[in-house]
Image 1 (spheres, rainbow, N blue to C red):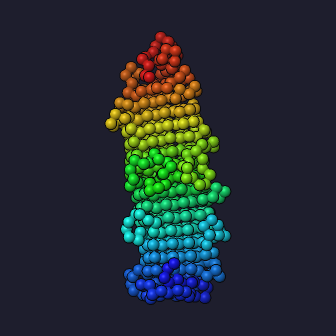
Image 2: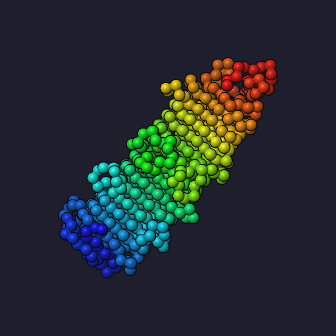
Image 3: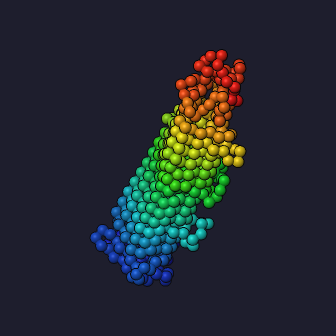
Length: 449
């Protein structure tokens, strides 16, 4: 409880409680039209230990705080409310509606023109909590944000963070039956940020990268929300946009629905992309297996992927398209079930570090793999066709693959699989453990298995 609480009403305000807290005797509060204005009488002073609560009779409050605040609590109750803070905020609890799940679906606005700071600069605790509640709410934080939990609640909510974000949790619609379409954007660099967008068709944007301070734990999906950099899009048809930046030790999970991932040129190291999956901690109805339309992931030209994993599990089939000049080092692809498509643009390069190499596993289903012209392969690149008894198609440009001296190892082929090198087609024959050119048993080359 803040040491001084202002109760704002249509008539004015009352100071309900005052415990001689530092700075509370330096407040200037007045009502101007439909808005309440709260200022510090000392220029540049931070108002400490302040609480604001709106009277239930004030259904649409407009509160402006012209100062930085610490140890700050605001409860705006019912109504379409606006809270503007023209300064920095630390140690805060802000509740835009009086119920997290649903409070009359009021459309509230929170505008912080400064930073949402940690209390002591450390990253060991949650220092700021924001509850948006019901309605289509808008949250704008112009500066950076640290050590904060934000609950968007129900409705079609929007949050934009203008500066860098560190140790932040954002949760969308918690309830499976409520599918708000949320918009979540990070315009600065993000570190140790976790997002669960919940139900609905959501959009999540990272403009300048996402990193985790905890290395090499991205494969542990059960703990992915405990201190790591992670995104789960939940159920619904969602969009994930990854701007040009550095992504390291991060996990992206599209959940259920027909989702899209757009990757701008940048670098990805120790990153997991799990299409059509859900964590054990998922709370909005997302499931591991998606029977609806497939997901699509695209990357721009000249993107670097190092020790990064792509996996899909959609029975309807997923599509992954990588732009020209992408570089893959010890990167793995697992296509799972469904009829999937995997396309590598021209000039792609597959590198090998530490004798590991990259692996492509087509899993189950009739899959198509396309390698663009000028693709370069190095040692320990493996294509596993899954031996699944259905037709898999692999296409190489004529200048990317030499049958007599292949630079990629192909295993798991069966009698249904077809390999195209330019205009030549090779069919696999398990009886002779070999690929045959144009279906003729007189022209063949050594098996690649």
